[in-house]
Image (cartoon, rainbow, N blue to C red; front, side, top):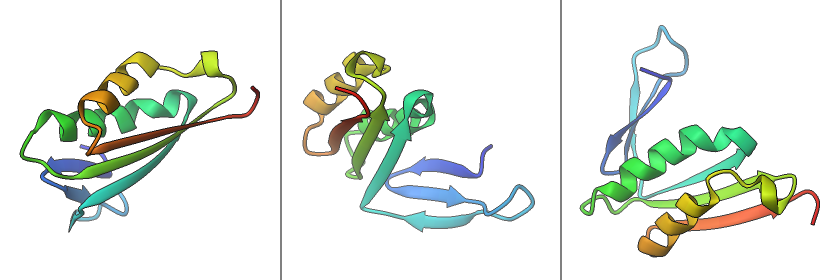
Length: 97
């Protein structure tokens, strides 16, 4: 169990440190910023939200990479965006064109 655990339906359990009890927060939308391989934990949360049709949480992801060909998991991200366009917003930023 990590410091941030998604419990479904917009509910997150957040622990400031490993010894703390979790603080529960419920959100309508969540903003995420990832770079390179940092996409992996973000994608886990996005998948959990999108697989539940009764979860109306909206995800906004800004994914930073060096170049367009460095974008990891791009086909999966774009498939999720296309299937769930009302709930998953996706943007890329590149350091070099």
